[in-house]
Amino acid sequence: MLYRENGQFKTTYAADQQIFPIAQDRVLIAALLALAFVVTPLLASEYLLRAILIPFLILSLAALGLNILTGYCGQISLGTGGFMAVGAYAAYNFTVRIDGMPLVAAILLGGLCATVVGVVFGIPSLRIKGLYLAVTTLAAQFFCDWAFLRIKWFTNYSSSGSVSVSDLRLFGWTLDTPAEKYLFCLGFVALFALLAKNLVRSHIGREWMAIRDMDVAAAVIGIRPVYAKLTAFAVSSFFVGVAGALWGFVHLGAWEPAAFNIDRSFQLLFMVIIGGLGSIMGSFFGAAFIVVLPIVLDNLPYWFDIPIDTALAAHLTFIIFGTLIVFFLIVEPHGLARLWSIGKEKLRLWPFPH
Image 1: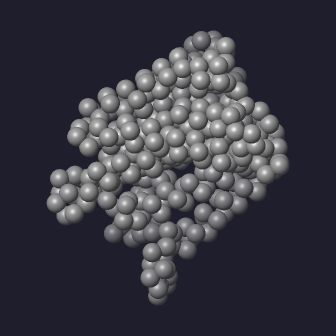
Image 2: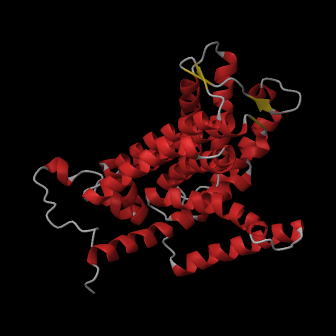
Image 3: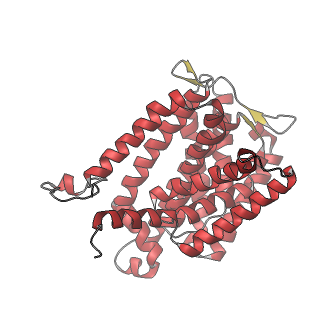
């Protein structure tokens, strides 16, 4: 009975076009932001911040970028890990080669470099689509892996092939505790999620969805497929590049090209599919499913004092994890975000059957 919109009248265009038109949604989001920004840094343990929350936030940002391309524009991409690598290595080179480069500027410039690479590899989408486009973006993944492994300039001629960053400083403030790094990532994710939400509600977002639904019909009504597809690749690559820079700088600290291999691309694609294609909230649901569930399955035998071999526990984790993915896709092919929407609709109608 609490989730009703009776009496919530819209008297202005601004009120009618707001992101959360229902007052209860605005209260829930405000409470969630207060919990994330204030309560969590004070109460969460170091393990929770380092191993769960920071990876969840960064992968949510990467899944958000992929969802813009695949969910909203309908362009399949298997090169997301490569674009993350471009953002990470570009940001690293900006900090190494330019003295006094601010951290935020280096991360954003890394995202811009990923944008350029994403647009270049997005050009084939103007002529091909579907599985053929997936193979083209897969070539981008392999090319990025080869470039960062073989071209020593990208790693500042490191003998081991790996790079490392230290002393993350933000306006003279050193980010050295897990809570500070968590808040830094959370700020990025909150701003980029707001940007993505407004983009998909704008005219460019409607163009993306028209191209996704039927590109020939979209071209007939005046939408430029070249502009729509390349802007989707550009925005998606920018989000993913920033996520890659955060993954390398904040979460890993030191990394090599294997940190952004093909497994990362498939992991992000699974997040988008499980969470819900064409849904901002689905990107967060998918990231939570992929990040949190394996940790829960790994620790479940120890929580209940079940004697089990470590190798067997690892294999059972993969089996259960894969089975749950298949189960969720059968029960709701549109992802966890659709289940969330159905639950909200039922709350708005309860107890009436219609």
